[in-house]
Image 1 (cartoon, rainbow, N blue to C red):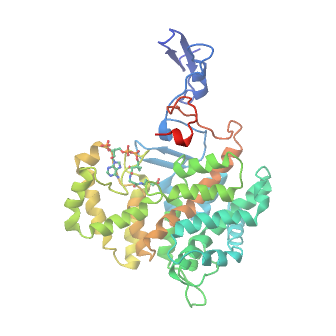
Image 2: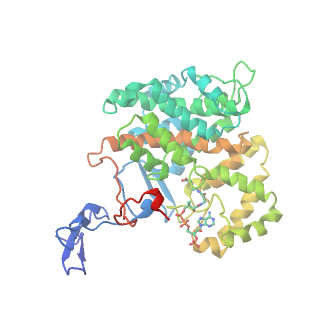
Image 3: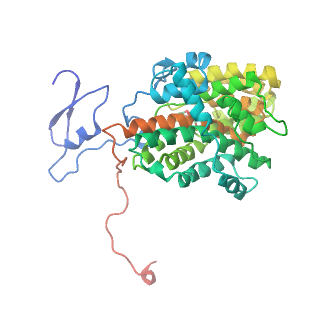
Length: 429
Ligand code: CMC
């Protein structure tokens, strides 16, 4: 074997093994041959939270977190955000190439014409309590779509996969908007096929008595860019959940619902909501020193800072910050911005944050934009889930077509009790 290999000496036995290195990785299964004797199960790697484990090959999204690079299908995120429209970039992520005009027209038509949800959903939403969290309503209602489309279980039928993909991308904004309307006590608004994906979402959120809702073009474009920035982010917690759940081959509705549940937590997509709650709690620039002291003492986190992969400025955060200023031209400046800017200024120069490489992530500024758009904080994670549905579906489809993928099944180190006999309850102390 040439230089692309790793030689391991097992000091327990003195045996040497040569493992091939491919694409900067060794195969976990190659460790299994390393045994102390024939009865030994073989060596495993221990990697809680999969910090250093590649679980798949992928051609969708490239991230180099050390230098802050993010590309979809090879295109830098800043170019896509500046020049693309949401459905165009969604098509790119899903199919690997930018669409021709004809492909984009057909794609846009298809998405618009699948956006309505079965009327039973009115009753579903009305069944939720008035104060139900919109993300929990979204997770439940996406799973409920599974009951309407039983053919979706034919995950080897390519026509069905295409149809369910379109349905999910089209219906997610409708369910998201209806979750919001339910929590506000407003009547549900129907999709308007004349509008763009983002324009129609604003329509379903905010249309009241007017006959035709006309989205503000600056806000519509800002939302389009935010959606582009959140489309995919390789093997994060929710995407890995999509692949893990999808590996047992259920229909994509329940798999997307599971992925959305993973997104809900405050360490993942729930961070944008947590950021706004944090900024509200700080309340004023004068309270920042005291707040930062508690962060330095490790009593709390600076939400919207830090990332498992980015050890540099998250390239999405830079773009989101720019959009914030454009949105405030229309809505008026959100006073939370001053607190956010000051927190960022301090964090970028303070030792605690610098030595831990904690930079603003995508969620740090998105919340103050959503608030300026008139959304309550509990809708922020929903805003993340809408575009990320495209990423989840793309990753799911890639997994289905990957001959190396099987049902996901990690191993464990068992360190519980050894075998022991049952004791009747009267004899237990
Ligand atoms: N504020 C203060 N300290 C922090 C923060 C923070 N936001 N994030 C990490 N640290 C500290 C952490 O306490 C640890 O310090 P020490 O070495 O003294 O124990 C060190 O930095 C390393 O942190 P870690 O928890 O080992 O890092 P991780 O890679 O496991 O976690 C993270 C990544 C994103 C969960 C974490 O940075 C965090 O909780 N950030 C706040 C939540 C947040 O903004 N999440 C959104 C992520 S971006 C959107 C998405 O893709 O979901």
